[in-house]
Image 1 (tube, rainbow over the protein chains, first blue to last red):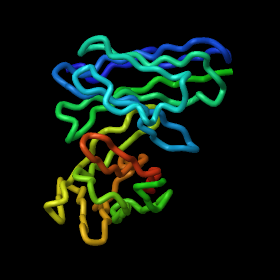
Image 2: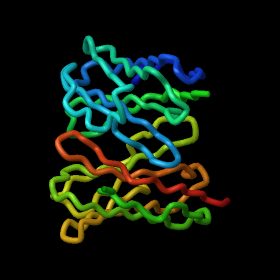
Image 3: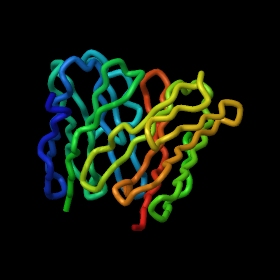
Length: 113
Length: 110
């Protein structure tokens, strides 16, 4: 299996622009998680899905952030408009059951100037 | 509210020594306690995990000790190697939702 796939790996954008991060979970995994990692705040859970349905989005920082999972093999995290404080590494992870280990993707390093 | 407290923030150990990282939690509903290892530029990867019905789990050089009454768990790395140098995160999960500690940067000196 190829593991969790994220794209792009790096994204540099200007403040105010829309940013879309993409994730392909491991086939057969019913849970998908979006995390943000920064030096200041560590690893934060933003939102997670079960069977393509958002279960808990309490970690989404603001209305500028939105996430979708249109099917079992694809999810997006969108930031509109982006701000410099959104600069971070964003990870997608998937899990077979939601009660066990999570498999993380390589992350997308976002820089907003 | 910080639900999982991890210490120390950084740790330096000589090759062959024992590395110990500690975590404490507050939410008694947590039912799964994994440890993740992260190398620079990579995503976290599961190292070892434990459920609260056991007090210890060992996999190779890595051992988790779990104290349910104290709400604490720790990672022990025996015979630490330079290749173990990484950031380690503890986590605690409740119904699939994980809360991570702040991480410990481990440096193993040759």
